[in-house]
Every structure is written in structure tokens, then in C-alpha cells.
Image 1: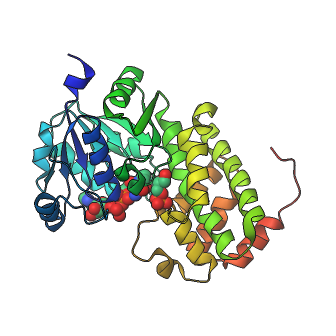
Image 2 (image 1 turned 30 degrees about the vertical axis):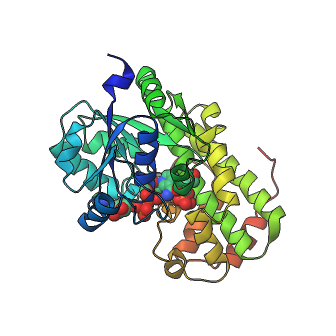
Length: 332
Ligand SMILES: NC(=O)c1ccc[n+]([C@@H]2O[C@H](COP(=O)([O-])OP(=O)(O)OC[C@H]3O[C@@H](n4cnc5c(N)ncnc54)[C@H](O)[C@@H]3O)[C@@H](O)[C@H]2O)c1
Ligand SMILES: O=P(O)(O)OC[C@H](O)CO
């Protein structure tokens, strides 16, 4: 059986912006797609109008079937998990009860679980031991993918052949998916970039300018690299789409919800106001990332500053002043 036949039907768990965008992308790649969302009202809208409540302007093709019953995902031969990181635990527990064993489960979430310090493939492995964890990450706004704009991502799994098969069957003319056997490296890039995007947004919100942003991005990337290396990941992964690539995108664009959250903090809004009801994954990841780094004697002053700002322990100007007052040191 060819990979295309084996993975003719793909399931997507999560009917938000990214779940719907990836469902569209998989349909463009020739897959049949079952799109599960917990919100029955959103499912009804998607079924009747083919519009996506969280993705204005997108239209779902007939090859995407929105469903509100999780058991309907059992028709799929691989699953994409597109719910927020902090919601992955209960969703995986439910999936483990609803679906057969042996399915590849591709996390598309970018974060670290706050209460456990687990990366997303580890959450999948713990809560859904029958699944085969994989990760999909890289620079991509859901709206861009949905519009069919050229985008490149990385799909990683410990089983290199599986990663290659999944990358091939999910790629299309507009979405190019590279494969990798370094899932930890790919998920660290996706999680850490969100924290750096908040920091970049803060610098711009404070009016500190483009030179400050560039300095933060470069020193932030040094933190990401140190953090990744402590987990034994490949440096090429961190220099790739899910590390450097996503840092470049998310730290440069107000389209990034994490950057927009930081921008609002820099402009003087409180952490609660700054979120504005939108998901900024970095706000949940900053503190646990800094804590995990400290436990390994890795310096992550930017992540620590972001975490302290979000916790209300320090103001934005004070935090930046603290970063600038650090002892002069060698660059690496
Ligand atoms: N939007 C993007 O451009 C983008 C790009 C790349 C990666 N991601 C990642 O994808 C993940 C999801 O983000 P999004 O943009 O789709 O967010 P979103 O806010 O648009 O949607 C999140 C969805 O998850 C659902 N959800 C939340 N808790 C749930 C639970 N316990 N059970 C079931 N469903 C639940 C919500 O109802 C909502 O439909 C995040 O980790 C994000 O970092 C998003
Ligand atoms: O809107 P953000 O900040 O969640 O970023 C979306 C994607 O992760 C960008 O690659």
C-alpha cells in the first residue's frame, strides 16, 4: 500500500483557526479530512455554510467533513492535534478512549504544558500511549495556509520513514513539508519562539525601535539554542523552519498573536487586557520554560523577564532595564 493510500483519510482534532487551516491544506493535498471540534455550534456552521467561524474568508471543500462526535475520527489513519497546548491533556485522554491504537498523532500545538513541563509529543505519549507521536511546526499563519499562500513546515517523528510518508501525503503545491527525525528539536523551536515573539512585541510597544528588536531576536535565539542543546536536539533543527524560521516570522509580524500580546504589554496594558481573548501560547509557556532552563543551569534572561512581566512581578520598562544592566559578557 502506498503512503497516499494508507493515509487517504486524515483526522484533525481542533476546530480553531489552525485546525481548520490544516484541514484545508490536507484537502488540497488530496486527503479526505474529518475535522472534529468540540463546539457543536461551530460544527453546524461549518457543515451548513462551509465557512469557518475562526478563519474569516475560508471555505471548506466537500472533502472536509466537520464533526462534533470524536468517535467519527476513527475513520482517519493519522490525526493532527490542533488544540492549545494546555488543552492537549484532556483531549488526548478522550482520544485514547475513542480511537483504535497505532494511529500517528501529529501535534500542531506550540507550547510546553505549564503544570508538568512536558513538550507536546510527551503529553501525547503519556495520555495516549497507543498513538505514535509526531510534531508539525514552522513559520505559518493559519490565514496564510488557508489562502493557499506558499508555506513551509517541518514534520518530525522518531520514526524517520513515518515522518517522510506523512510529510509527502500532506504536502501540496502551496504547502511544502520537510521531514525530520528530531521531534524534540522541532517542538522546542515552536514553543520557545512564542516567548521571544512576546519579548519582541514588548520592545516595539515600548517604542524602543528596530535595533532593539533585532538585538532581542538575536539574543533570544541564543537562549532558544542553549535551551534546545540542553535537551540534546540537533542544531540544524534549531536553525531550520521551526526554530529560526518561526522566530523570524513571529517576532516581525503583528499578525502573530504572541507578538500582538507583547505589543499591548509594551503599550501599557495589563497581562489580562493584553490577551484580548486571543490565544497567545507564549504567555503560558514563558514561566515553565524559564523554570526548566534554570533547573538545567541554562541562562534564559529574556524568557525570565517575559515570565516576570506576565506574573506582574515587574513592569515592562524595569524588565528591559534589567536586561540591559546585565554584566557584559562574551557573546556566546
Ligand atoms: N493560528 C495559527 O496561525 C497557528 C499557526 C501555527 C500553530 N498554531 C498552534 O495551533 C494551536 C491551536 O491554535 P489556534 O490558532 O487554532 O487557536 P484558536 O484559538 O483559533 O482555536 C483553538 C481551538 O481549540 C479548541 N479547544 C480549546 N480547548 C479545548 C478542549 N479542551 N477540547 C477541545 N477543543 C478545545 C477551541 O474551541 C478552539 O476551537 C496552538 O498551539 C497554536 O500555537 C496556530
Ligand atoms: O499567532 P501566533 O503568535 O500564535 O503565531 C502563529 C504561528 O505560530 C506562526 O508560525
